[in-house]
Amino acid sequence: MNNPRPIQKLPQDTARKIAAGEVIDRPAAIVRELMDNAIDANAKYITVEIEEGGIAKIRVRDDGFGMTKNDLAACAYPHATSKIVTDQDLLELNTLGFRGEALASIAAVSRLEITSIRQGEIAHKLEAFGTTEHKVVPTQWNKGTVVESTQLFENFPARRVFLKKPQAEAKLCKQSFIEKAMPWTSVGFKFIQDGKVKFDFQPDETKAERFVHALELSEPVNFFHEVSFQDKAQGFEFTLVLGNAEIRRSDKRNIYIFVNGRRIWEYGLIQAIEYGGQGYFPNGTYPVAALFLNVDSKLVDFNIHPAKKEVRFKDLSPIHHAISTATRNFYKDSSIAELVKGASALSDETPSFSESFSETEDFFKKPEKNAFQSGFSDKPARSFSDSFKAYQPQAFQEKFHAERTYKPSYEVSTHSNYSAEHSAPDNKPAVYSENMNYAALSVEDYAPEYEENSFHYYGTALGVFMLVEMNNALYFIDQHAAHERILFNQFMKSIGSKQKLLFPYIIETESEADDEYLESIKDELEKAGFELKNDGGGTWQIESVCTKWSGTEEDLKKDLLEKRIAPNELIRSIAARASCRAAVKDGTILDSKTAEALAKEALQLEDKHCPHGRPILTAISKEQFFNMVRRTE
Image (cartoon, rainbow, N blue to C red):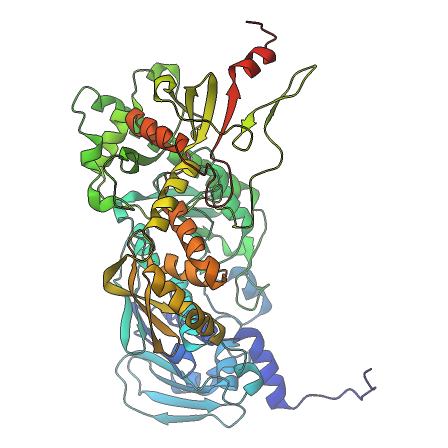
C-alpha cells in the first residue's frame, strides 16, 4: 500500500524532464521536431545526419532565414516561440511547429548546440544542457541554421534503457525523415546515416516522384498518377497519388495521409481511399497511395496530440466523399482505358504470352512440363458489359505484358496468407435443399484418381476457381492454393541446393533476442541452403539462399524473425511463405493452356492441401447435381 505524502512542487529539473518526455521519447522525435523548424524557416535544402541511431548525435542543417542573437538566447526555454502570440493564433496555424516546446525539451534530455545567422547580421552559437544557464557566443557561419543534439538521455538513464538498438532507432529516424520529406516536394532533403548518404531528394520533384523515391518502391514512377481536386466553398483541396490497379499490397501500410504538410493517423481518410478502390483489388489487398490534403486552418485542430499525429476536423464528411469519389473515378477511368486498349489490340498483333514474360521474371525455375508457372498475368480479373463481348482476356494480357516489362513486387494477399496452425475447415460447403443437405465433396471425402481421357477443362469462375469435369464430377480447383502446393513441393525437393547472392542481403536485428534466435537456427538454415554470417552489432549477412527461395531482403527478414519458429519447423515455414508469395494470386487471369496445365497437375498431386492446410479443391458429383434439381437418370 502507498503511504500518504505531502503534495509539493517538483524541482525544475525533474519537471522539465517529465514534460520533455511527452515530446521527445526517442531520437526520431528530435528529427521530426528539427525538420519542422527547418521547413518553417523557408529552407530550400535540409540535411539530416544521425550517428548510432541518433542516440550519439543528430545534426540538422538548413539554408532558411536563420535566427538573431536574441532569438537564440530565448529559443531553448519552455514555451518560447515566434509562431503564435495569443490563443487566437491557434485557430489560424500556418506553420508545422507552434507550441515552443521542442528545443526546450531537447535541451532537457540531451546536449543542444545551435549555430545560426540572420542575413546581414553576425552569426552566433547557443549551447544548452538541462537547467544550466544557456550560453550564446559569436561564431562563424554563412547561411541558415544548424542544430546538433548529442548524448540523448545522458542525464535521464530511466528513459535511456527503453531505447532500442541503434539499428532499430535509425530506422525510426529514417521513417520520420521520409514522412517530413514526402509532402514538401519544393524542398530538397538529404539523409545521412553513420556517414553514408541514404536519401538525397532533389527540390521540385512531382508528388508522385517524391512518393516513389521516398518509399523506395520497385514499381516505376510512370505507374503512379496524380489526381487533384479543389473545393473553395468547403475550404479544402487535395492531390492524390494513386498507383495503377495492378500495384497492390496485402495491408494498408502504403497508404499515407498528409494534412497541411503533416503525416497524420486518420482512419476516416484511409477508409475513403479504400472505399474508392473497392471492386478493383482482389480480396485482402489494398492500393499504394498517398493523400496530400490542405484544409483551411480554421477548419482543423492540430493542438490535440504532442506529436501532432492526430487531428480534429470541423466536418470530415465532404472531404471523405470527395476523396472516395476521386479515387473511384480514377480506377474506373483507367480500367475502361485499359479495356479499350486491349480490345484494339485484337485487330493488331497478338504477341506470344510466354515470350513476353521473360525467364528472368519467373519466381522459380520452370520445369519443362509445367507451362503454367510462367503463363499468367497479374492484372486483376474484371467483368464487363455485353457490349465488350469481343474482348479476349488472353490477347489483352499479352499486350499488357508486352508493354510493361518491370517485375512487380506484390505482397501476399491476406486471403491466402493463412497461419501454419490453420487446418482444413471442418464444415464442408453445403448446397441447400428442402428435404436433404447435399454437401459438396471435399478433398477429404473424395480423393480423385486422375484420368486423362475423362479430363475436360471448362474455364475459370469467380476469379479464382478452375472448373474441370472428370469422372462424372465437377471440380472447383483454387488456382492460388494449387499453385502454392506445387511450388512448395518443388521447394522441399530442392532443400540443400543453394544459389550465391551477387550482393548479400543485410538483416539488422532489433534486439539481442533476435541475434540469439538467428544463432540458434543458423545450422538448420545452412542445411537448407541459406548461409548466414554474423557481422556483430546486430548485423547479419545472408550470402546464399536456397535455389527455390524467392523474395526481397525484407521478405527474408520476416520469414526468419516474424514468428521465431522452432528450428525443426523453420524450413517448412520458409518454404510455405515463399511459395505463397510466388503463387498465382486470386483474380489473376490465366490463359486457357496455362490454366489447363495447372489444373492437370493439381489433380495429380499426392497431397491436395496447400502448405497451410487448406484443401485445394472441392467437387460435386453428377448424382449430387441430379438430386439438387430432383432429376432422375
